Length: 115
Image (cartoon, rainbow, N blue to C red; front, side):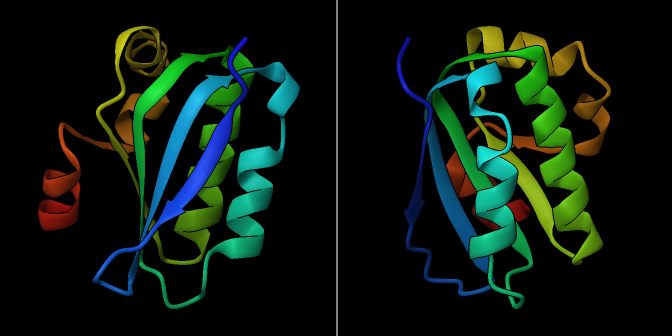
């Protein structure tokens, strides 16, 4: 199993935080994403863009954690946008209620421009 990793990328727009997610987001990583969001997203950030193109798999528990991340961000007036979820990740999201709550963009440029 490829380890789940989140990396921060710089964005010229300081109100936007870009995260790269890669590996397999599974049950063993419960709490990692939401804790990172709670601890590292500055209060002036209005949009968190997660490049999900590097995620190979996502578990049902991880989808539940994404829902919690979305709620935490929404409570602080911030939007969550996923970029290019592929394969199994896209199918898992489409089958969950999150498909209406989280914006999905085909490219990072689209997420930065239109999100």
